[in-house]
Image (tube, rainbow, N blue to C red; front, top):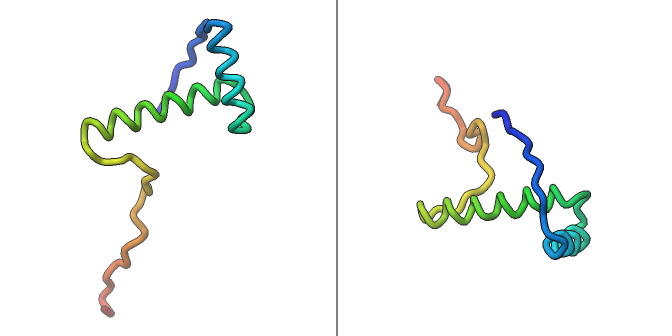
Length: 71
């Protein structure tokens, strides 16, 4: 997956709120806070559309034991 970076301008009030969140969450910068907020919005949208809460997924399901000839 390839992402594109865009520069955005934000108001002083929003900058202040993002800084408060950044400090409360212990994040390195405001961009990280914005990424988390956008991710949460996307998760909520998926839940609203599907009724399923998104979560971490394994690329390969290694939780089930494969049957072998000896089973």
